[in-house]
Length: 280
Image (tube, rainbow, N blue to C red; front, side):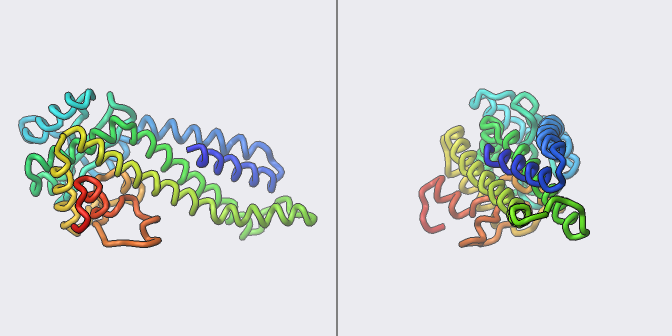
């Protein structure tokens, strides 16, 4: 997170230097903080609308409600609001600004294929995200990464279209060259950091969920079932993909450098970490 803020400040400083306007740096920092606060308060409403989620009732989804209520008590957390996403692709996510305003949403496809202990494993995973404050962390990371990309794009477009700026003399030319390289690479660096954080938090939520249920095999079995359905969600979105327990675009076997660009660790690695199985 410190490195993220440093990226924002360095990028803002360079652009303010280039355009000879210190106000740009102040605006960059202020805007980053403002967007963090806005996302913190309204992220749950935005995500629920994006995925067309509806509120679940105890009468309609008795097993889901009871599992969530019991696990919330065991975790020492307030019971989150439950939402249903009408989608045949099995998946689930948690969102909200804190444990008192948390939301857990599951798809109808998830409820149709999981047994009781598997469902409990998934809910425990999502409650662990809430207890570990991952919603706040992921919101801040996404906003900062998006902001860095936006600022870099604006600067590069201004250069392409001949925007004025400081590029006189040898020293000025060197600074501009370094700044151009930084503006090109900063969005990539921000994206890689965001994805790395997302993968680490998934591993942590798996471990925390297994401790909560005392039955890691339940979550491991659920992950294998979820990954066996290649159908992507109808409302799959790059901006919210990191929130889900599994990639909403469908699981694919990826290795090597491609892992750096994944929002989730490979299912095989997650299952292996849960139950110690080397060959899935």
